[in-house]
Length: 318
Image 1 (cartoon, helix red, strand yellow):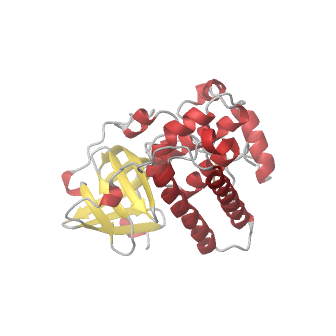
Image 2: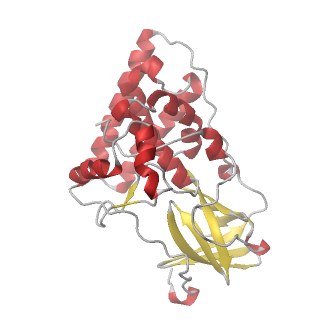
Image 3: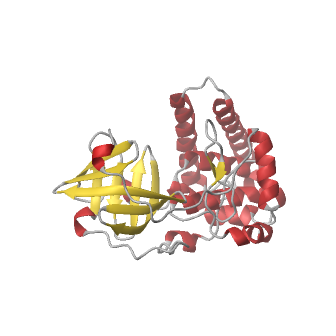
């Protein structure tokens, strides 16, 4: 169970620093001034910060960034979780409208940037030694929470609200715990419990927590045999949430009623080299195993189309 979970991570300084230029040929972004700044969705809770070279979004408790590849004739081209997308962006006074196929979102301008849009890392507690009984209790609690997480995600009758409730409760528990005692490391809790904590953190999708734990996950799981998958999964997930492409090919999209495919790679020609560096098997072997679990063939990343234009707002309903 722990060896086959799907997630990835690298070096903290590279992730929280200035965003790297995506490996695509796009002109330098030039987002007009009337689009820049913080916004809140009119009929929803989504928050958005438009900057010259990225969008920072916060929705349903999750923070993400999308890289702006270019802005031309009202068409905003972005890299969203590794996929090139095109949005028509129109600002009129204090209102911003973003139009995509099948979706129109309207935002109102905010006077200041909300804290939810700031990428402040979760403060981890000091990893001090703990009494044996406390370690045992934490090991049992994390194991039970992972079992519930797996059960509710596999149960076809589970409603999305039930899944979200379990994930949110696990994330609250993990956040409270690591702020008190530090990350759930292998030295104090063993690799099984530490791996389980990685899975819970990944499923929770709290970018601030994942970034804070990244160096410790790297220390514990990089070059740890099959368990290096924990490091690879978190790294890839963070890269995608920072508006980049994944490195190790662990992140898959379209599971369910759509044919799954690997999200775009940082460097497809070197992906097996990157995987070998941390002790993982080639991507083809990984995808073969994942295909058996999903009982579906997994395709490679789709071709990108930077030249595609935006749809007009008149052709898209709410």
